[in-house]
Amino acid sequence: MNNYFKLFISILLPLLVGGLSGFFTTSGVSGWYAVANKPSFNPPNWIFAPVWTTLYVLMGIALYLVWKSTNTTFAVKQNAIILFVVQLTLNFFWSIIFFKLQLTGWALVEIIAMWLAILVTILWFGKISSIAAWLLVPYICWVSFATVLNYSIWRLN
Image (cartoon, rainbow, N blue to C red; front, side):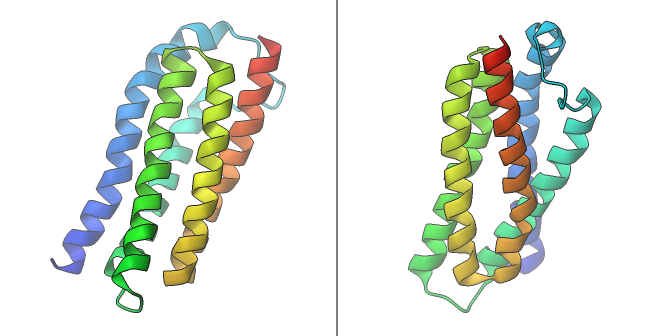
């Protein structure tokens, strides 16, 4: 498989997951979330789509760097990719739990699990490519902020 195709698939995968989760997010944002009590530091709704799109592209590039790498064992690369899929799956389900099901407490538990999965993914990616690991740092920073926001919305409602 050539590297251009790997890059395309690597970026497409998180963007598709983000697009699907965006489908579940839309109904919640215009519904219960619009009238929910939110903290003063809650960003405007328009900021989320460009931030998440950027993060998904960075995640895809990081995945590509790991996937194309030849400087590690198959087992290390396989574990790193499995961890990536785990954190991406958690990312997808957070939107459903928070926005669609409106279970902000359970979403908080889930986003903490996602944060931990991202951290472990960063550590494994770092074994293969320091650039790939660093490309995930904005993602864990945003999820850290989202965790605080999730907690605040849970407490306020």
